[in-house]
Image (cartoon, rainbow, N blue to C red; front, side, top):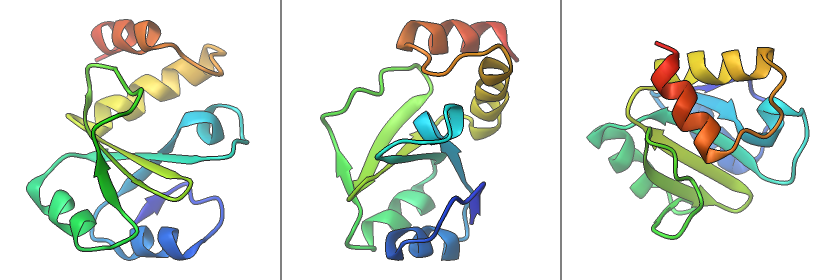
Length: 118
C-alpha cells in the first residue's frame, strides 16, 4: 500500500498491491514536485523478497542516501525505495522537518533530526 499516493504508474500499482506500506518522501513530499518519486518502507526479509520478485525493481549499491536510517535502496525507472530501520521514526522526523520549513534536508540535517526526534 502506498501512503500519500500522487498518481499511479504500472510500477506504483505493484507497490499499491503490496502487503507493505510505502511512504512518500523526497522532493515530492517536501516540495510537491520532482522528477523522481521517492518512497520509504520498513526493512524486512519479506519486503526484500517482494521487491526482488518484481522485475522493474532492483537493489542498487551506488546511491546518495547516506542517512543513518537507510539500510537498502531499491529502484525502478523514476522510483527509489529506501528500506529503513524504523519507518515510523522516519515519518515522525520528516514530518517535523517539513513543519520546520525544510524543503531539501541534507544528510547531516537528517542524521541530527534522527537523534533529536524520538
